[in-house]
Image 1 (cartoon, rainbow, N blue to C red):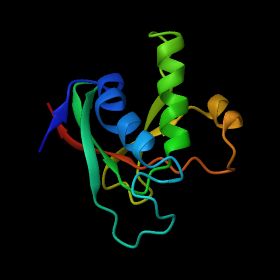
Image 2: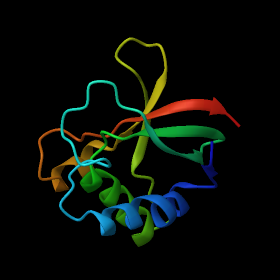
Image 3: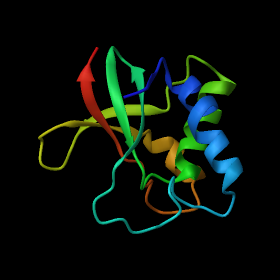
Image 4: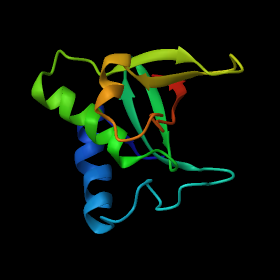
Length: 115
């Protein structure tokens, strides 16, 4: 498991090159509906290791990335329990969702481990 030190580095090393290689893809692997999505990659944040599932939309990750790049103290994420309360997930702040083209954020980032 290759773990990137933070979200910005994860975007620069993993996400942006993947999107540049496949500009027509909406999700990290190009398919909208994935029955059993796998992990695309890992990064550290809030003293934890987070996994980004391959069905996450590029648009949402790019918005989070842009938010941090514009102001490193502007955190685009909130930590929320999953629907089943079995794990924690990172979700986009409510005020940022208005900038998405979709009514849903399609952000699938889950707690992998505490680092």
